[in-house]
Length: 330
Image (cartoon, rainbow, N blue to C red; front, side, top):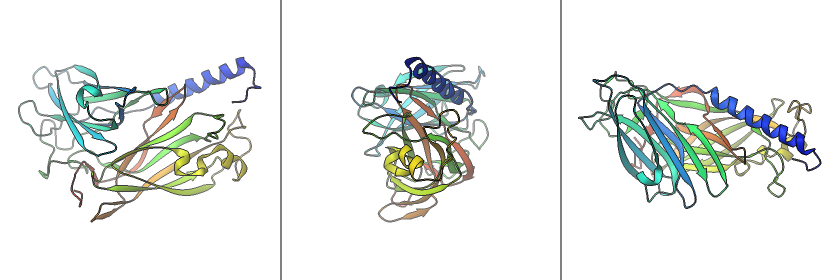
């Protein structure tokens, strides 16, 4: 943001941006379910993550649940397990360091289990959220968990095929998305100046297996329907700046090298914006390649006005799995 802009105008703009981010967060809908996916936890030195899971059931007879937490380290893809019991209307909040003290950063998925039987259970009363305090960037944000409903009927086991893997296939839980759409990104600032809108990063969650690298195909649109393509490959989890994926995301490129709309952003045309769509290209292990793999992604904007939002999804596909360790997948 230019230093020539009056201080009051800069302050008003900051408040308007913050209000827009808050309105976006309030507009999300996410019904209770049996399986929760937290796209990121950060327990590195100097960083903290608070996870919350709440049991919305009011059934005093059959409303208690045991929740199994699976922490997947983003570098090693190794899992750590933890359990919590929630009675009806109960909630629990904790630092992830207490559950997975030897893990740095990655993602977590949690699912309902029966109180007396160890099997995963259809119990569509769970909701959750995360607050991440990133000591590396000095940012902080909150984001709701991605929630998937059970598909076997309340109280019934969900491991239909008995393989010990949580399948997002429409039979055990709701299906994984076919494509993911991010409705807006701001043109990214030149790292040497730091000026412009917040620096943005994408968090990716692989849903093929711990032995697979997933390649995602991008269609990136400027503010005048002009389209560009790119790809990015990650392991079981990843977090990467938008400009490391493609220079198309930079404000300078969008302004100087595309047929952009000179009147947008409306009311702030010195800066550019666009949107993008992601689709799975392939997922590969040392022995197996799977076309059109399932994955999840969330956009995080890192600044003193940090924000994060759940993605919009397009269509469904039945090949999302949490989280096989075989070289052949599930």
